[in-house]
Length: 285
Length: 199
Image (cartoon, rainbow over all chains, first blue to last red; front, side, top):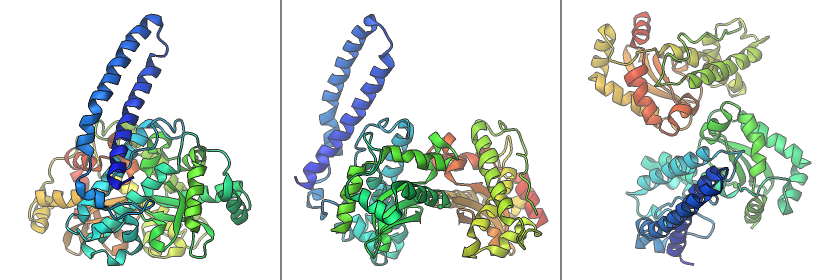
């Protein structure tokens, strides 16, 4: 599938997700009403379905990337910089409740992540040559990014890469014990999953200010727990981020306030071990 | 010596609708209190225990082996200072010597406001925006996380907290809106003038 088609489908999926989410919320709210109410509901749903149908082509035109995007030099696993595109959330905003609330997800994805993408593209506007690189390639080699935009690329490119991973390694069907190869590797490196969880949570609590806590594959190809400040990514240090949790206050403040520890311990309920396994494989290849 | 959590110098509702009661409750009673408690626990029994907190901050700044103690000490001090930088019916423009000094060093009050807002908006991650006296000159600075101007020999006159916990319940991702409101409606210029007078 060409890059252009992929982006096209992405925007369509986002909107469908949005409308599905709104419809589901409405249905939930109406759930307690009696039979008479359900007639009204049927009417409303048909109207909404019509709206979705009518709205989609319009939105696709609006969000369709420019033709130059078709030539984006990017691999399957790395992010294009020509321009960088906000990926849709792979599930509804409320899908991770009660562990992460819908309002947090909406702000986090639609505002915070979107702003990183926007600022990243803005920083690269005057550097068309750079746009042929992937975002990851720039972060791996920041010294080669022109000095006047280096910090912007670091912060916003990092924000884009980190958040793109973050949405993917969470799922409403997540949680539980790790599976597959990563389960074995965690046991080998940390003794047990429980021990790994404890160390990961502690590292997240100890990261002062804004940042991330990571499970990385390090230089020696070993598993290691690390943290980074702000939007710095392990990619900058030549490490591969297998999984990471966002400990910026915006990731948890609406739901957990000052209790970062509680957020960290609840987060295991939404970890998508399939995707973590996929990333673990990628780290080894 | 143990550092005492000062009470908020006004009611929790005093800054509404600009900064909500629940923000001040969490910010003062949880965040500030935690910094103070952690500082007291960590400094107890050490050679630094007999020094005032400002001296501890200056003494251990940059010492990576004491970064935990530094962070809690500086955050304890920063928040105490921050509460005083705000008041009910704040905002407006400074007067007297402070107004003259701002005009002399920044060109105009508007220029100062622009610089201060920019410092707050561009401090990536968590941190603080400051108006300081550096030698004889007023300057706007910004610091990351717990860092503060005491460690650079500057005299803090005004600060604004731009950690997300300072504004997320009221403004969410809209930090610039919080900053505008802080300057227009909340800042306590009397306190800033008093700091300049004492410097």
